[in-house]
Image (cartoon, rainbow, N blue to C red; front, top):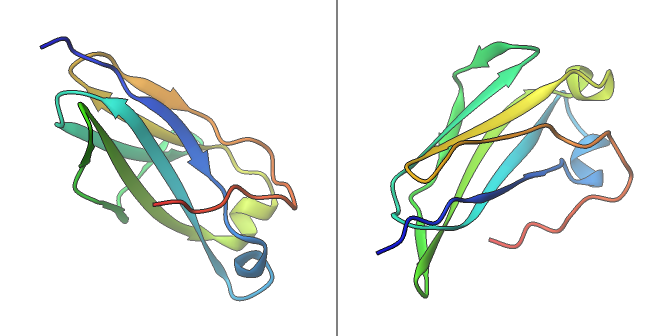
Length: 110
């Protein structure tokens, strides 16, 4: 069994979430990896964030998909603080910086 490293992307807060409340949700989506053991971590400006959720990996064919979510202050997102999602996997680690805030957010597909 070959090790397959994950492809990772950030999922931005939805437009409705950005217009309501003081907190927003960032998602981190890891896809196409095998074996299923994967660990997510988050940081803001180099400081570790500990209050995040990691969901169990889901198998799709021969590969797995994993998701993590973190709640952050809307003010930090609006001021374009540097949030990072780090995915640790046996086949290689991936670090992803979120793209700049935008009105158009990817659909939540999981």
